[in-house]
Picture 1 (cartoon, helix red, strand yellow):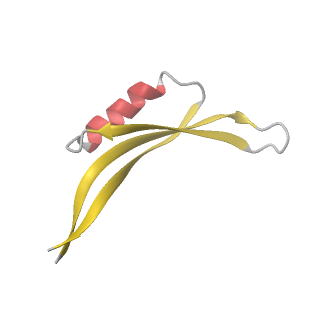
Picture 2 (tube, rainbow, N blue to C red):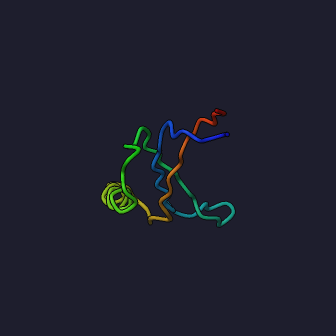
Length: 74
């Protein structure tokens, strides 16, 4: 039987930091924080993302998590 084992979790903050003057498209920047506690709750991750977003310029565009898993077969 195959299973997933969580190896690490990352928190990614995405911001719109202006508009490209050449083509008028938004400038999107992503900032990733690695090695987040694997047991962190969704609420704790969201609160951390909101707190960190106050340190950046631009408008918060979204917060996401990225899980890296190892697939194992027993």
